[in-house]
Amino acid sequence: MLIVGLGNPGKEYEWTRHNLGFMLIDKLAHDAGFAVGRRECSSLVGRGEIEGVRTKLAKPQTFMNLSGHAVSCLLAKIESESPLKELVVISDDLALPFGKIRVRERGSAGGHNGLKSIIASLGTNDFVRLRIGIQPDHPISDSKRFVLDTFSKSERAVVAEVLDQSAKAIRTIIRDGALKAMSEFN
Image: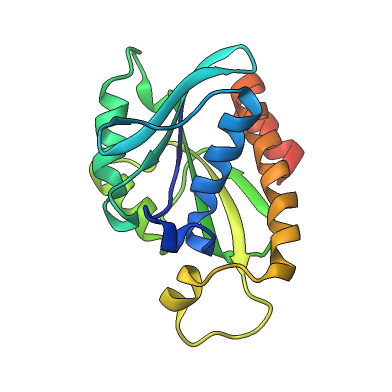
């Protein structure tokens, strides 16, 4: 399995809404007892077992809107007849309420630049993704600024909960497949 969390590299983006993919990769690695730090395909990667399955966790270091380059390179290294079936992409989602998650087997980019880049690079939208909601409870005038803002202290408790739920969903995808995860977590 290849699990890719989307985000932006650098300390200044660490606690931003756009970095939930990176945060979840870090949680999955910590929970499974391995590190994500080796450089490969313009990404930081780590390998280990999750739910008894050899899994590669990756955080592209290309910035969000160029994630496709890193993902296509990582996917090319998978020795499988259908490598797309081995891919799960984790992203934030501005259209999904804050704290909610959605698993999908395929779909559009939904305005997300990281997903747009991956779909363009792979030439398909036929891959599993886990979307983590960041929709504000009030109107915003600048969505780019909003996704790059850091979570407030009060939001961080919800972030911890949603990361726990998201980690369970990823483990379910690995163990039982996306359909099972969709019925359990959507």
